[in-house]
Image (cartoon, rainbow, N blue to C red; front, top):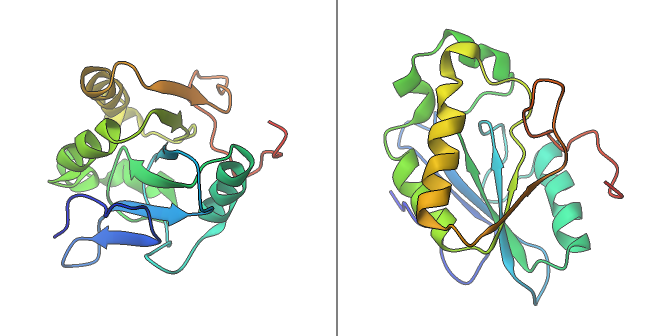
Length: 166
């Protein structure tokens, strides 16, 4: 398994051998500019070549921000199109055994990070948000960290239904 995305940035992704986990995804959207990081809840259907609705939305934001490309990491590595299904999973099964190692590498390789995991973090798994934000701060305290806004419950908004003027 490749626990670190290739450099320079390209369209790629890394999955577990059984295909149930995606540890990272990368997209190149321009020839020049910085590489950023989108930090979501869990992977959906996007792969090395295929994109889902969220990745297409991130592509639009990345282009507008002048990024050359971006990496995607997630609080949980388990692939699930309906994040509510994470509720029934154990912390270990949802997280993925190599996810912290991958996130550590991703956090250390960028200067701009966008938190965008949305409002669907299951209650039993919410400690993961604090753990990951703490890891981010320890690995890259100088990174610019932002989000699209906060939900009523204080979670970083998922960008899928947002305007590019957000």
